Amino acid sequence: MSGHQVSDQWRARYAGSLMNTFGPPKLVLERGAGARVWDTDGNEYLDLLGGIAVNALGHGHPALVEAVTRQLSTLGHVSNFFTTGPQVELAEKLLALVDPAGRGTPGKVFFTNSGTEANEAGFKLTRRTGRTHVVVAEGGFHGRTMGALALTSKEAYRAPFEPLPGEVTFVPYGDADALAAAVTDRTAAVLLEPVQGEAGVVVPPADYLATARRIATEHGALLWLDEVQTGMGRTGRWFAHHAAPGLAELGGPDLVTVAKGLGGGFPIGALVGLGDAADLLQPGNHGTTFGGNPVACAAALAVVATIESEGLLEHVTVLGRRLRDGLAADPRVSEVRGEGLLVGLDLVADGSAAVAEVAQARGFIVNNPTPRRIRLAPPLVLSAADVEEFLAAWPAILDEAIGSASGASGSVGE
Ligand SMILES: *Cc1c(COP(=O)(O)O)cnc(C)c1O
Image 1 (tube, rainbow, N blue to C red):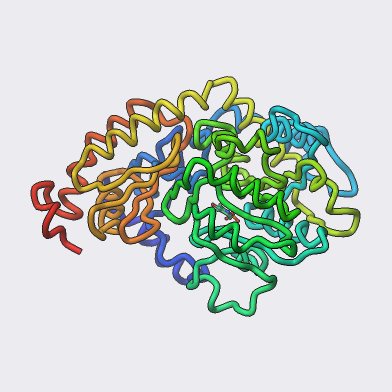
Image 2 (cartoon, protein in one colour; image 1 turned 90 degrees about the vertical axis):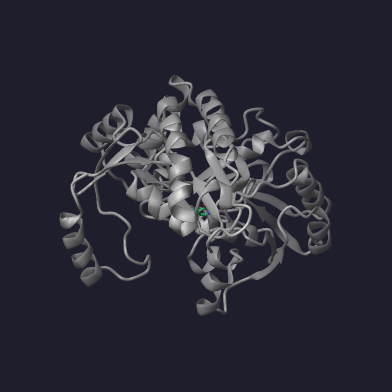
């Protein structure tokens, strides 16, 4: 560790030149390798957030570097008046991964540059059903553009920008009765995250997605799953909804949105339409300049190939279990949730900001999405040794941030 002088200079220039949408940056990062990153003062960190579930292959993975470099030096961009091999290959690959059983009509893909844009495209697609009502879960996060924000419940995000488009009904997440009561024959779509990420990794009852499918089908509405955070192997399956009992038998989702981990850090998102939903967007209905860019598609193909060749789904499952068990062992942790390497935990009292701050000072990057919750979404290439290193440091991080284990049941500092 060698201080923060260089980073502080960048911070001052940041404050003078970037819009203050994110608050002051916690770190000024310079380079990365695997699950490690270094700041501009040479301090090393174990990256347990992975760019918020983005850096699936960690930092600087040779397969990703090679794929992007090769594609950029071959053909870096074309307009969507044209197509490229990587674009078509990635669409086919994504369809096979989202819908491995290949149920019914083949699906189709629309590529974007981000999760928000994938959801924006999905929102527009739902209008092509001829209906305008969408049912969404409270606590869900679907993005920040006006359309995606209309589908996002958090009042602090929405209030400054109202009126937002759309007839949107919010229902408590995981509550099948509330969903059944909200969906009508005027509903275009039900939009849900299989696990709520930004909310702090909230897992619904096991039968929730299958029930949502049944309710949507009953009313002729689309079932749309936002897998922007949970998709691409994050939970130990290609898509989190693959673990939902009974969902596939009922036909699976109509729409799946993907981004974050898809490009392993290269910006790319996708709207996947399955069955009849695949053909709702027609020529002129939507567009993008960068979406489906060959470099982004080559990056995503490399991510998929590497997850396959390095057996990362199994790796993620094993590591996630060890990580959750280890974290839950501390009495100052009241609950640990999640699947694979999407992990959320509740502290027995508020204090997650202090925990994240202390963890960072000790060389671990974690996220505090709510005052009591910590979220981890590390690179899928995290090693077993990395996990043990963090678990060994965890009790002392809590000691410093919120007080000793013996005092935890009573007066943990708020
Ligand atoms: C991050 C996220 C988004 C927004 O994606 P961006 O790439 O930031 O636009 C949408 N939905 C979910 C579930 C997310 O986690």
